[in-house]
Length: 427
Image 1 (cartoon, helix red, strand yellow):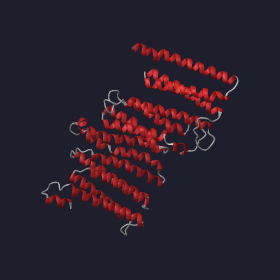
Image 2 (cartoon, one colour):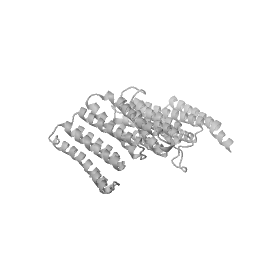
Image 3 (cartoon, helix red, strand yellow):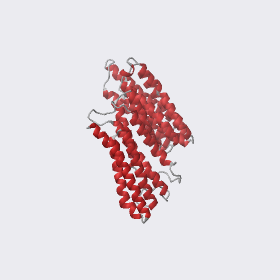
Image 4 (cartoon, helix red, strand yellow):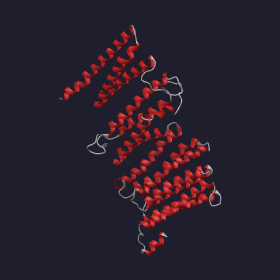
């Protein structure tokens, strides 16, 4: 129908409505097959192989429409519908092996079409968003079906293989006339997708909290890419990932119930789930270039924001490790007041963290870190006076006052020696 409409138009573009009609028919055919499968358990009164072949041909039709009309948003629609089809067929009783074959064939077809579009000089970014999105969605299908087959150990290698499959597209972009400067936005799309798949392979293989850890590991990878291919879209991506990681780990109380306590202090699940993201954000803050990490000239730099987020995760890790050591139930319980030992451990931990943060702020000449350290130290002192010392008596209270006084005196010396002295020199 599309070709006939173009012939009647004299070989010209038949217009968007013909394209929309063709896409609607093809997508409708895909979704109709899925609904029929889920409703009756069978489709077309035929074997599953016939159903998979029909779905593959429908995807071919969508990609042909995209290539014919050069409206590559159709390719993105094809990637999304292919994922929905694969998920629905897996839930509708199709064997995991057959679902894997269909998902792999659909992804391979999208990769080949995108590579062919690059070879003929297609400038649209949407032509590359389709295989990038398809790779990410297909990885979710592969993970689910490999788990059903008892082959979970293959998920990580599959992610690496998908990243390798996008390498020819990146090479084609770099070898095109003009190279990196002429195709900066498209290089960012493909290279970002490759880095996302590579960084996801590690937590996918480790299994625990793989989504959050994978997102966190992607942040320094994108920061490294931004240092070589500066692009504001990468900064937006980095900021969004950092916010997502922070929300998932700091504002999601369900994380305390994801796993039972192991009974092992320090070297446990919390060190992995919070330590790796914290190190990833801190590394990203060092990788970002100082003169190119602003979303807009009037906005603050992104590197200090990432460093603050990493420090927040380390502080959360400290509190979780202390709470894990003194919890008695199957899960960790975060409390400001507990036993005397846990209260004192929390106060000492806060004080040590504040002193370490102050030392980092002095060494890096980071004013925000020094102010945060002083505020945390003040909160620690207030907690010690109002809550902890009331539980002590006799010599224990005396020694605690002496230790607190010595600590405050050392902090005052550090402030006088490094912070106030720097201000005096600047004045």
